[in-house]
Image (tube, rainbow, N blue to C red):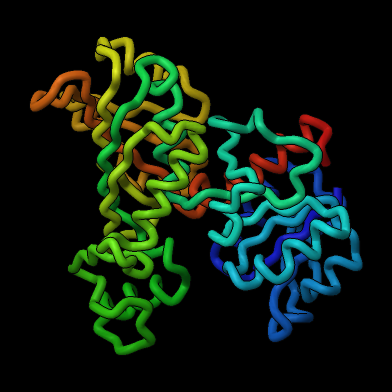
Length: 329
């Protein structure tokens, strides 16, 4: 299968290449794609070298599938051109997520809705992906009424510039800034731009995307998204209120049975998910599972995942795997 990776030189694009190799996706030919300034650079994939081409050149090479991670403006401009050429696009930007004509897919949650006519498929926001994977079995069993989520998000979610800023500050060096404030030894309660309602765009993404992926607008979601000085993954404190009563042991068993979820929850041994342990892994980790004693039918969870992998690259590759399995590419 001919596979294009658009944005192959970026953080998520590089991770996509790693995940494609690790999961042995059947790549017969890799087409690394980036902007004009990266044209001709060499990318190593499974011991072979491939030259970076521009998006226009990539379309002419007729890949079967194109994994996009090059930002919203590139996706808006080029994804329709790839789709018109019969190439299936899986896009990691926010460009198509809330477009009612495009599917927003987390394979373990709503992969069954994919059809051959879906030529541009949206990959959700990283913080949304890890939350809905955990929500799915609980919604099926107890019907979710309301979710209150606070995130603790890695600097890798912003990109290379943010990682450099953190490491520069840690080393006491001056350098380019990705954030308006120091991030080392600090916490910034601000991810993406502020909206008129006082929420940030990241917070609104979590609210709107959750409803779309779960296929249920009745689920009420409120979010506070926060950047913290860690690398390795995003963490979330998630409070879920159900319509129906639950048994805590049954709820835990439902999470343990969910594809893509690993329960790490043993307070007696101080075992709970942490981003350093999720780093480089494809699963979503959940722990600190406990009843909310302040109100009925409500549970507290701590959810952690590698934002560059399940939160971006792995999810996109899993969508491609599902399309292949269904014979849609």
